[in-house]
Each structure stands twice: as C-alpha cells, then as structure tokens.
Amino acid sequence: MTFFKQILLLVLVLNVFELQQITAQELIELQPSEVQSLIQSKTKQKAVLVNLWATWCGPCIEEFPDIVYLAEKYKDQLDVIFISGDFPDDTLRVKEYLLNQKVNWSTWLKSGSESEFIDAVHSEWSGALPFTIIYKKGGDEVVYWENKAELSKFEEFILKAVNN
Amino acid sequence: MKVYRTVFSFLVLILFTYQSGLAQQKEELSLGSEIPFADLKMTDVSGKELSLNDVKLENGLLVIFSCNTCPYVKAWESRYLKVADLASSQKIGLIALNPNEAMRSDKESLEEMIKISTSMKYTFPYAVDKNHVLADAFGATKTPNVYLFDKTNKLVFVGSIDDNSAKEAEVKHTFLMDALKEVGSGKAVSVKHSKALGCSIKRVK
Image 1 (cartoon, rainbow over the protein chains, first blue to last red):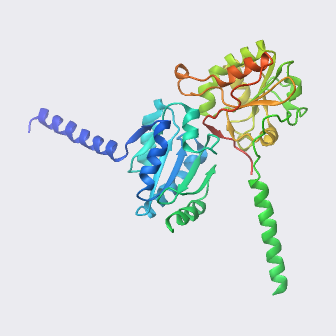
Image 2: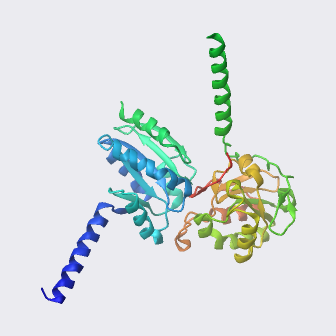
C-alpha cells in the first residue's frame, strides 16, 4: 500500500474510533421544557435515577463512580440520567470525564434559563449540586436529596425503587 | 440482657440525636425575617472586623454568600461590581461572606480571599463567615446565594443575581438588580425568589 493510502486508512480508522466514542457517550443539550418529558420517557421502561452534577463540583465527583457502579449493577431495572451543570464551553472536559468513568450511555448537559431549569427538575431543589432524584418504574417519586451521598444510601433507595 | 438492651437503646438514641443534629439543616430564612446575627463581627479582607449592622446602609443590606473557587461565582463575579455600584447608589450596604470552613486552611483561606478581592477589584467587603455561622442561620445551601434586606431589616429577596450565569448576553431576568431598585425606592419587591445553580457550601462536619 502506498504511503498516502496508509495515511488515509489511518485517518479513516481514527475517525471511526472517534465516532464510536461520541456515539457511545453522547452529551445532549437539555432545555428546561424537555426535562420532564425525558424523565417520563425513561420511567415508562424502568426505575430512574436522576443526578445533577458538574466536573468542577467536588462532592459530585466523589459520588459519581458509585452511581456508575450501581447503574451497571442494576442496569436491567434502572436507568441513570446524568445531567451536567457544566458550562457550554466545557463540553470537552465533560466528555473526557465521562469517558474516564466509563459512562457508555447518553447523558445530558443543562441548557437555557437556569431558574427555569431548576424548577423543571424539581420544585424543592435549591440549585445546589449535587442533586439526586429516584423514581419507580411508572414515574412515582421515591426520594430526592441535595448533597453528596454514600453508596449505601444510593443502593438503599434504588432497591426501594426497583422492588415494587 | 436487660442491661445490654438499655445500653444499646441509649446508644441508638444518642446516634439518632447526633444524626438529627447534623441533618438539621438549616431551613432557609423566610421572607420577612430579621437579619440574623446582625452584630457578629467577621474578619474582612481589609483586616477590619465587620458586622452586618456595620455594613448596612439607610435603605437596606445585601448579603452574598460567595467563595474563591466555585465556577458559578466566577461566572457572575464580573457582575458583582455592577451589583455593588447599584447597591451603593440605592444606599443599600453590601457584603460578601465566605462560609466554606471545610476548605479554610486551603483555597478558601483569608489569604486567598484577599487575592480574589484584589484581582477582581471588589468595591465591597468580603469577610470570613467562620464556621459558617451566618450561612447556617440564613439556611444558605450554596454559593453564590443572595439575601436582600430592606430598610426595616426585613428579608425581601432571596436567590440569584440573574437567570443565566453562563451567558450574560442571554440574561432575561435581572432579579437582583430589579430588587435593589425596588428596595432603594421603598417599593415592594415583585420577584421575591429566584433560583440558580451553585456549589454546595463546604461545611465542617
């Protein structure tokens, strides 16, 4: 194969690899008006855990691996909706973090008016990160809380959600 | 057996009480409340010891819980100066308080606060809320978090500076600026609450 063709093949392979990565962990902008319809669409199929986080939020990062672990453990019964509060300019950093944490499902990035967004997520949320809500399949809310939580707390309420 | 059961019950009671105490956060200060701990002296970046009453002006007081590290504070920081100018013209005193006691020996130290205040050219005091006493009394959950009191020392607005930290050009509602003008002219505040994203306050356990 000529040198030129080798380079072309390499570029093609790299692009396909990159495309797979982007598809595997798509980061989708989420407007306030779309929040509830997203949650409702997911709760039709399974119990759902919603977690609001950001790459610069220390407590969010501390609990993040636990949530990923539980997402895998309960994947047949639970969907995890990660919504990042990072700024739009930091999309690459968010994607890199998700890649490092082996989050291979789509997650979301807050967009639009903040106050509308916070109200759309939960009426009792003050806007402090992290924030977690857990729903049963069908959409009934099990629990919500502000601040970081231990793995045991997440698992306790996930079990309540999945064991109807 | 009876002794063990009594001891165990006692331990459970202590544990429950202790945990309840920890979990007792701090309900948010309700509208109409008076300024909490108004005379508590706090160390300011200027070296002075200041209380909220020291800072208050004839038309009211604005308290912003802020910090050195939160990206949401950074996003709004340039707007702090506009807020400060307006507060001053409306004869409303302004003070920023740093409640992040859990990081006080590191990035939220007074030394770091002085650097921030200098580099960002703060025109208002920035003081240490030691052990987050004020943040607890206000029920503040995050930085930035804004509390506005009127000339009668009553809380009339709680929330955020505006509705878009990321993009100043796309701000639709300038909540705080509007409230400052209303308080300055003795009118009732029309939008009394607004919400915004922020970093949770780093409290000591």
